Length: 246
Image (tube, rainbow, N blue to C red; front, side, top):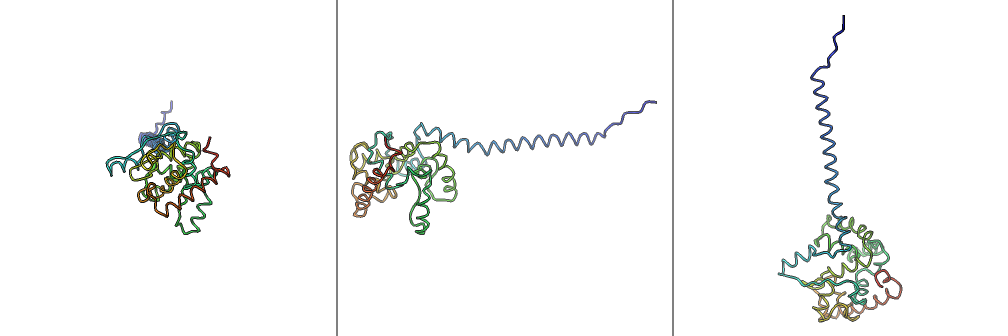
């Protein structure tokens, strides 16, 4: 007499099918979560790569200042059309070791810490990252993002491009962005024709463009500009300007 085939309980089969669906749903959720986490990173990397060859159309600071005061002055010029004296002056004033570091000047950071953090230690690369990709208000979030993006920009952009972008997006007077607009506003000439002293005066206003005037400098700003002239000559002589000069 043939034995009757044993049948698995229907309840257990349904449970296994249900468990399988839950596993597939969990895997799908994990994949989508990874994609959602990677999407902003990929977007930022693509933007960094894009802005290596395409000039940033605007920045958060330019946009917000334009809204606040009803418009800004800005004209993009390539580095080749900017006076070498102006490029050297800005580097000497803001980041003399620009050609030597990978985005962070550790010696400047240590000096700032020893000085009780009363002085700044941001490099031109950090300032470019802040100006192009982030915002001006101080916060731990912005500093963390800046620290993350700075090495990526150093890796993907040549030094000349970093300096070129900085010189075209930095605020150099209230509502005046970029070296070309600053040269025209302060001295009535293009950035290509700036003298050594004029370039140094513009560089001297960079930390506080809304409260300093390159065209009508205070005694302190004149002394600062003279110091920048000396610093620019120094980095030209010792090779610290080599990475951005022809």
